[in-house]
Each structure stands twice: as C-alpha cells, then as structure tokens.
Amino acid sequence: MTTNEKVAALRALMTKKNIDAVIIPSADAHQSEYSAPRFAVRAWISGFTGSAGTVVVTKDHGGVWVDSRYFLQCAKEIEGTPYTMHPLQVQTAAEWVSWIAENLPKGSKVGIDGRVFSVLSAKEIKNTLAQKGISLAVDFDPSQIWVENRPDMPCTPIYVHDLHTAGVSAVDKVNAIRSFIKEQSADAIVIDALDEVAYTLNIRGGDVAYNPVTYAYLVITTKNAILFTDEKKLNPEVKNYLQSIAVDVLPYDEIDRFLREGKMGKTLCIDAAKFSAYHREILPKDVVVKCITSPVAMMKCVKNNAEIKGEHRAMLKDAVALTEFFRRVEEESQEKGYDEADLASLVGDIRKKQKGYISESFGAIVGFKENGAIVHYSPKKGSAKKIEGSGMILIDTGGQYSDGTTDITRVWYFGTPSQEEKTAYTAVLKAHIALERLVFPQGYSGPQLDTIARQNLWHEGLNYGHGTGHGVGAAMNVHEGPASFGNKGITCGVPLEVGMVISDEPGYYKAGGFGIRIENCVTVRRAFENENGVFFGFSHLTLCPIETKLVDVEMMTDGELEWLNAYHADVLDKVLPLVKGEDARWLMQKCSPVYRK
Image 1 (tube, one colour):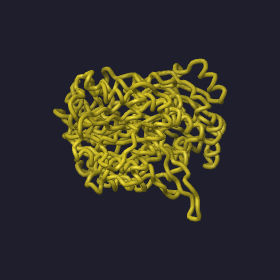
Image 2: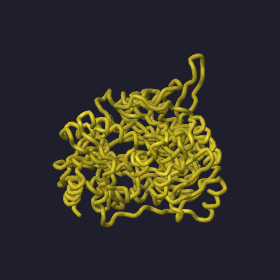
Image 3: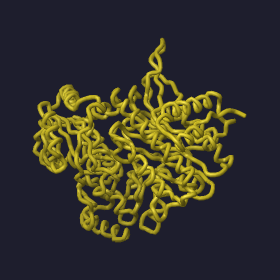
Image 4: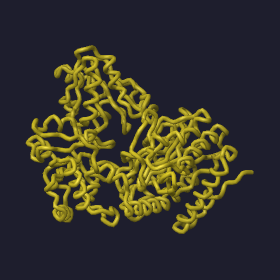
C-alpha cells in the first residue's frame, strides 16, 4: 500500500467507527521510547521514520508533529504524501491536542488505541478536548488496517545480568518494592516499563533494537511476583534463575485476563505515566487504584557503586574502539571513498572487538556537511553522502556492553574551517565545559541548570532545540528517565543525586550548512560540604579527544582551556596504555595541549 492508500483505508475505518480524528503516537503498549517493528504504526501510516513524532489524521487533514531534531528528516520523508509537518514549539508538549481542539467542531469524537497511551496522557487529552465539547474513545485501533507484512511480536532470548555488575540482587530489589507497596497500603504494583522490568529482575533481552530489554510485564504483590512474557524466551538456566528468586512466569497475553479478573488484589499501585489507558479501563470497578511514581524509576536512575564501576569499564572499552574508529574516519574516509553509511557500519564492526560488547546503543548518526544539521539523521546506503572535500562531520554513536552503556558525540573537520564554523563550535564547547565544571547546591534539578550551558550560545545569538542531556542507563536503555537537563518549557525535574549518569550534549545546527554537538556522559558526584550545605558536581565518564582544530582560542577563558587540557591529559593517561601503533600516534596528536598564541 502507498501512503495515500493507507490514509484512505484509515479514513474508511474512521467513518465506519464514527471517529473524526485519530492520534497515532510512536509508543508501544509499554509507553517505550523505542519499540519493536510490530508497533511502528506511526511510521507505517505516515512514512516518517524518526524515533519520535505523533501523527493526527482527520477527515481532511494529515499532520505529523515533530521536534527540532526531526524537522529536516520529516520534511524529506513526507514530501508528496497527504501529510503536513507541524514543528513543535516545545519538544515535550502535546501540541497536536490543542490543534485538534481548535480545528474540530463541537460534538466530534477522537479515537486512540488505549494500549499505546498511558493513563496520564489519555486523561490530559480527554480533559483538553472536553473543554471544546469533543469526546475521546480509547478503543480505536488504527493498526487494524495493517494486515499485510506486519511484523510479529519479537521473541529473543532472555539472559541473566551479572550480579557483579548489577550490584544489588533481584531478591533485594523485589523486597524493596514490596516495602513500598506496604507503605502505600496496597496489595500489588504493576511494572509496565520494559527497562524497569529488566532492572528489577536483573535480566536482559533483545526484543527492541539497541535496548537490552524484553517484552514483559511484572506484577509484584505482597506475597508473590509474576513475570508475564513469552516462555519461548526462557532457556533452562533462566527458568532456574527465575525460580530461585521466586518469580512465577505466565504468558505475555495473560496480563489482560489477570487484570480484568482482579487477581492482583483489591488495591493496586500503578504509575499513571506508564500504565496503559486500556488496562485502566479493564480493571474491575471495585479495585482501588493508587497512582504513584514507580519506585523502580529512581532505583534504576541512581546507580550504585558496582554500576558506576561497570560504566567506567564500558567507557574505557569504548575509548579504545573509538580511538581506532575516529582515526580511520579522519585518515581513511576520503582515501577509501567512504560515505556516511559506511562509517555508521564501521563503528559497530570496530566495537565488536571489545570483550563484553553486545550491540550499538542506538543507530549511529553520521552527518557530513549539511546532513550534520539533521539532528537524528540516519544515513542509508545509496543515499548517504560521500566523505569528500572539506567540511564538518558529526558522529553520534554509542555501545551496549555487559558492563554498561555508552553515548558520545564528536565533530571532526576535513580541511580548514571558516570563522563562522569555529565561532559556533567554540560556543558549543564552552556550553559543554560549563556543565562539566559546574558546582551546585544539593536539591537542584537538571532543567534548573540547563541555561548554564545555553548562555554561551545565546551570547553569540545561537541556540538549539533539543534538551542539553538525558539520563543514561547502566547496561540498559541509552535514554533513561527521570533525570535530564531538560529544555525550554521544562521548569522542574527530579533533584540530581550522586550516582546519576547523564549526557552533557549542547549543540548548534545551521540548516543547509553544518551540525555541531559535543557529548560526554557524566556522573553526579559529591563535591564538598560547608556551612552552606552539600554541593554537587559532575565527573566525566567518556574518554575521547575533543576536536581542537575548530576551537577559537580567543573565545576561551583560562579556566576553559585549563579544563580542556586536563580532560585530554586524563584521556591520555587512561587510554594510551591500551592502544598502540597508529592509534597511539593519533591519540597523542589529538590530545596535544592547547595554548594561547
């Protein structure tokens, strides 16, 4: 089916069901950021393949709402289709709901598939629409028209995550959750988020590309724990492990019947931001529902000492791989005729040499010249740009290791950069350094610190639309809540705590010109304590040179130059003993101190 035919089929179904508009998100039934191909309904119906975005189809309009990371990509992919791109003004805002409220007449009905909307998001949509006399139906499934070639549910093996790296046993985690349930005077909790299920039981899987998770639900009661998943994923070792930690296993689809029949008890804890609107609808009327923030979110977000040590090991392995990769990017790309897609493939091939490597943590972003300005650009063989001539190349890449998860962005330059390019790059570097050098009082959240970075770009009349950083999992999803540095429109967040791992990644993107982003993973540390309280800071985890060819030294303060040289000295100290030959030569050259003339 063409995109036009898909839209026509959807509108026919809408007419049959008396639906005036349908909202199609990117999420799966667990409100995941990244999901298996079976749940890629939004991409299938629209042709926009970016990892985030929302589609709205009415009887006479098709819209795709995306944030600044996807403006250029979306415009290209939906060209010639019945869709119009709607740029989000605020990255995290559901601006499509306001659009529907303003454009549909009173008495209209909007349909959503309640499985892929959380209780909270469905409630917010319903309340906004109700103000304009528009109703919401949570039982409209647009995927009904996807009858040909729809992927099956994934069924990759589950494996046990090493306790040495996890740091805390699954039994201790389950007991901590049981204590929480009792504090809430509840009988049970449903854990929907895939990474929270995997974290709690110290298991991992491969059902979602790049994320070591498995499709499953976990119900913990005051007396037992039940994992709902496909038993075909469990080998004898994993079955024995689950039995040893007193976790029963039921089929994945049994969760619906389990909830509908109220088998978890009369008082249930749910996280309204993760529990599906559909599951809320099927709960027995006599079940008391307590909406809480999942205790697993913070347990997972604040890494223990073993997890931080694992992150250090993963970052060091990544540093060795990236030293070879980035050297070859600089020295071989033009000689060997590489294009962006070749480099995106090469980085994974090089990482495979490292012990404990599992997969990339996301598809590598490799953008040369103007493609670097497409924030989440995914190069494809056949259309990828050749690396030839002078210009800037942006590479954002990460790895999943048994020890931990990495995420890094670097920019390199072929030829001699212009002053405009150097000014923009140096402003981004100053923004990056501002956060890494920051010391702040305990109790502050990431969004409160966001402007510390941005002020360096604002001073030059520059800005970027994405957040300054996101939480990073420990051998888990590369994007992890709830900690982040936020974005405009986000005025609050969880207070930062020692052990959190966050990316520091300011950027600047000139459409049609170039893209710049400099990203390290950092961990929150305790800096000092005095009569004014406890102060925190950040320690870098990522170990990789930062391009100095693009630095305008006159824009840098003495403190910023001192930080840059100290960072490169640390990279040399930790990584140089592990590399040799041409890689060692390149690393020493790239880590050379920078001084004023």
